[in-house]
Amino acid sequence: MQSKKVIRRFPSTLLLALAVGSPAAAYDYNHCVGDRIDWGRTTVDIYPHSGPFPFGSAKRSALEAAFAGWHNAPGTQFRYNVIYDNSPTLYFGDGKNSVFTTRDYDWGDAIAVTLWDPQCYWWGWGDLKETDVIFNDNVTWSFEVNPSSPPSPFSPYNFALVGIHELGHAFGLNHQLSTIATMNDIYPIGGTLGNYNSVQPHSDDVYGNRVGYGTCCTQRDVYASTYTSTSQTTTGRIPGPSQAYAGSSVSFQFSIGNRGTTNEGSVRVQYYLSTDRFISTSDTYLGAATFSMSSGGTSTFTATGVIPANQQSGTYYLGWVVDPLGSIPEVDESNNAVALVSPTLVTQYSSVCGNRVCESGESASSCLDDCPICGDSICGPVESSSSCPNDCPVVCGDSICSSGEDSFNCPGDCGTCGNFDCDPGEDYSCPEDCAICGNFVCEPGEDPFSCSSDCCVPGECQ
Image (tube, rainbow, N blue to C red):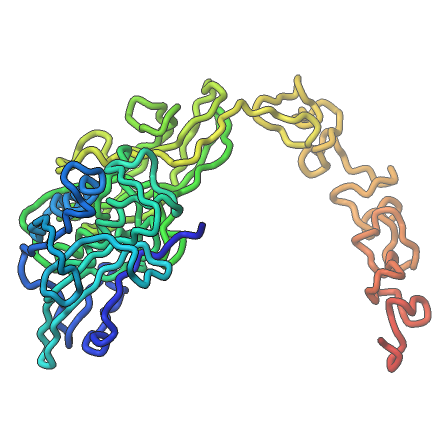
C-alpha cells in the first residue's frame, strides 16, 4: 500500500479570497492582503463528537494526546478549549469547530482533512470563522499514544500523529515543504521524537504557533529525531549502516531540533552503540560533536564515531543523546535521545592476505606480500623503484620496463617508440607502434590501407 497524503482542503468558493504565503519562511500561514489568517485570540472552543470518541476509549486518548502536544509546546499561548458533545448537526458551515470521523466523504488519497472558513476583507483583515477536522474511517488506525516504534509511511496510521497535524491546520498553519515538520503533507509527517516516540510538534511547527499567537515565557527544549527529509514533501526514517567493524570508524546520519524559545549556541551531541533501541549515556560511547541551533531550527547531520576494538560481534543500534550532560534546563528531557530504526551488524574485521593492501591486523610477518619490508632486498608485489629503490632498483637491460624507465632513457627495456614495432613496455606509452587494428579506433600508425576497418576511406565511411 502506498503512503497516503494528509491534506487540508478548502471550500472551492473561498480560494479566490486567499493569498497563499510563501513556504520559504519555513512555517506558513495563509494571508488576507498581507494579514495573517488566524483566530485572532489565544483560546478557541472545539467540539469533538463523543460518538466516535467515547469516554475511556483508545481513540479519545489518541485525540487527547494530539491536543496535549500543542498545549505543552514550549513557550506557546494558544489553547483549544475541548468540549465533547453529541450534536447531530455535524456539517461544515454551522459555525461550530467540530472533530469527527466518517466514511462518507470524497477522500481520494487523504486519511484526514481540515476544512477552513476564513473571513477576508479587501482592506487587509482576515480571521478564521470555523474549522472542522475529519478523520477517514475507511483506513486502519493505530491509537498508541507512544508508538512502539517510529511510524513508517504505511498502514496502520497513528491517529495521534495525524491528529496533531490536523489540529495545526485548525489554528491556521499550512503545509510545510522545506524542512522536517509535523506539518509536512505526507504521512508520517515529521514522525515522533525521542526514545519514547513522543507525539509532539517539531521545532518549526512550535515556532509557527508562537509567531501566530505569541510567546508566553522563556522555555528551552532540544530533541532527537530519527527522521529526515527525503524530498521537499516527504519525511522518512533515517536508515542505519548495515555493517560496521570493531576497531573501525562508522558514520551515520542523525537529526536534532530546538523547540525552545531561545537560540542555543552550544549543544553537545554524543553518539552511542546499544544492544536495543533505548539510548542512554550508559551505552557504548562512540564520539561527540557540538552544534549551534536557532530557535525553531532542525537539521540532519552526519556523525562519525569509532567502535571499540574489543566490541563483541553482534547486532546493535546506533543512536545519539542531545545535551547528555544536562547543561540546558529543559521543559522536557524525555525527547533527548533516540536510535536509528534499522540495526547494524558489528563484526571483527578480517584482513585478506594477497590483496596488495596492508590492512589492520596484517604485518610483514603474517603477510609479506601486502606488508613488505623496504630494505630486505626483496622487491615485493606492492613495491616499486619509486617506493623502495633499494629493493627494486632500476636496471636498464633487464628486459623490464620499470618505473623511471621509458623508451628514451632505456629503449632496450621499454622499446623505441616510432620504429613500428610494439616493443615490451610500449603497450600504452607508444600507440604509434602498438595500434590495434579492428578496435574501431583509427590510431596513430593506422590508415585506410593498413587498417580499413578502423580508418575508412573518405567518402566510403559508413
